[in-house]
Length: 238
Image (tube, rainbow, N blue to C red):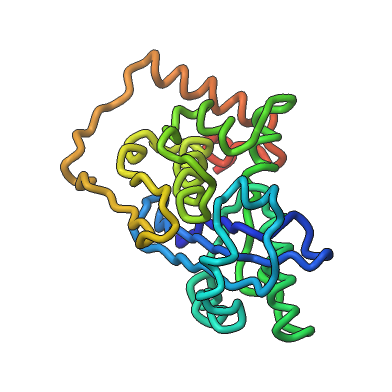
């Protein structure tokens, strides 16, 4: 299965107020493995950036003025995500902005969900951890995903962190890959490439003991209670 973990940065909070997408970062998962294949693009919004947004991502209007417009990069972007399952934290925000950009190109342009399906990890986290903080930073801390190298938000680095969180949150071994995320704080530098330096074939196979199997089944039972459609890893649901 091909999935794309996606994040955006914008000039502000509301597309209805004329705010625009300024950065798209996508990271590919195939069969729950980070492949190292990415899509990353800065975009000229042709408008000013709110001070609050600038404080979050540090991407300046002066830097973006030399970047292409969204309509010029949209064919390549849509080709990259076509037919996949998008994984987005607070998906209504990013999808809303991307749909707005597509409507600016053509009023009847197909929506993002016409190209692919979408998983909202924020909604998923709220089901798994009701009443708790479920921001990306909070989830990184909860699932032991290191984000100390991130000084400012960036679409591709945040997509990388979200990929690790998603794998951990859905039962994967995200911690195996967390050290492979590069430090990425300079927006003028080349975008990072996510790679897995350890060959999966070289990893030893360690079978779970009885206590670990019991703990695993207890965890599945907890997921079964809070998941809307039940736990797909529970043998009774297969």
